[in-house]
Length: 115
Image 1 (cartoon, rainbow, N blue to C red):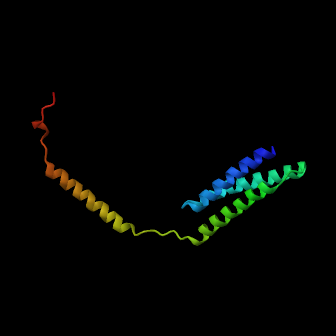
Image 2: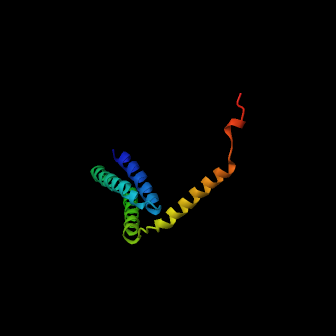
Image 3: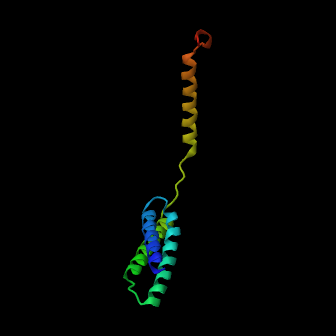
């Protein structure tokens, strides 16, 4: 059970570190909490059997780093909403251009023979 918890904790911690540096860093909280839980369970089983806890501490350090990075990005990054009116105007202009291009083509379907 100890080895399973260490493996799952290590995978979760690595995933949390990777997600914490990506733009969607809020997703890093889920594997970080899972890594903490697996790390605590692994410490419990290590105390019970008297095994080494060195790798478990690495798991916890990686988890703390990912939580710190995600929290920092959550607190200090601002969500900027771009002026949507300009985007809507550009969309209308491109739609009008597309309609004009289609009108310029002016194809007669009666002239086309499909056999």
